[in-house]
Image (cartoon, rainbow, N blue to C red; front, side, top):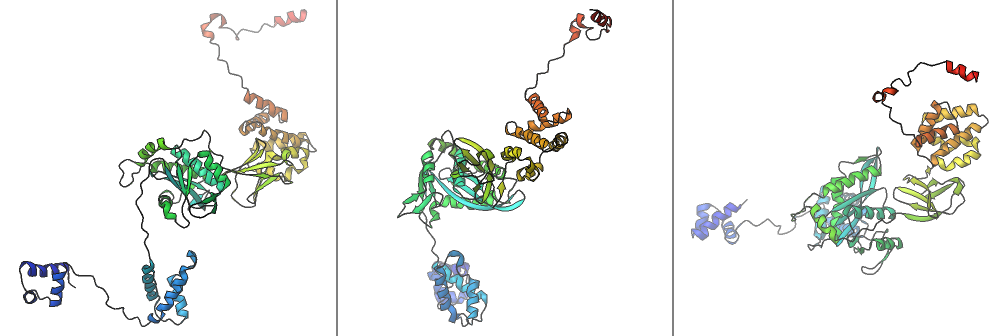
Length: 503
């Protein structure tokens, strides 16, 4: 094999020493063909095949492979032929060669069809543009390995990024992701670019026109930013945030994050986003943190309140005073069991509204066909039907966690007031939770038991004493007053009682 050094020696002999091809052949020993090539080229040319190598085994099947690859292009990405699947099909048609030969030929054919997209370097003005996308990652949540969806918003000028995790990509999560991103950045970029995601786009029209969701129009009108959409299947038009999805998966979510709740998980991601602001982007001297500080003056201002990130729907309670959401049922107070209500579904909370009043609030359940019950909602009905106390599902769950003093109080009331009257009075004690903090009611029950006042009146009295404690007066310093030194220590004069009786 000839090297660059060989060619250099030949070229020096020919051009510097003025030797002929014949003399170079005799002196250096190279054949005349090599000498002629070195005179023309400064280095050996790469080897190229003059004609294709013979392939007696796979050759008859090359046309069949070309047909399968052409068919594969018409199929969905996840259903296209792999090289292994093509090998299996060929083997069924009589192919006797190796699988490696099929893999190599398929790779060469696919490289011929590859077209590497070309892009133009872009530059953005401060405060003007941002990009939004969704990604997913695995985390350990409450001890279980689960897949979470994460919302990410990237600013095109400063390259600052915000990430927030949700159990789904529903519209309420989409809105809440924006809310928290705007709060994190301290303002609103004037234009945001999206894929054609269903939470914003109802229908794709000709060109760049879109029929947007009515709820998204309200959201955009509230914050007054402009929306921009990529062409279908052209995610590279917002390539910055597309890269951010992979960046978050590799840097924020690896190793797997461990948290007990979404609240704790998002606190970890918020901190990671803050720390990430101190990086520097290639070609920029200021940090992302400094660029974001400059960018804030160009943002649209944040309104006084964030947009309510919820989806509202009218609901009517069923016979068990429950309303439905995503196959789960949430309780409402039995007093409103016949009212027409409104359910507001937030990403992590559910509220049930009557008029302008929130009559019930629950943590949102992400399971299926679950009952989410607040025992306080059923106490009024239990007062009327104390016989159902032992089997009432809401109370059974509560009894697993309430203080042991509650069981002591219930037993004392049942002993003193038989025939269900003790249970009714105990339910009246539980109703105190509607108007007072749980820890105060628990302290009042304990204090009443210690005083031997195991009754509704006893608990109320102790509760009032907890809420209206008398300030403790300081002790009088008798040492400073000689006339009071003997006060409280003088002997008892029993003759005073004789005088009282005599009168």
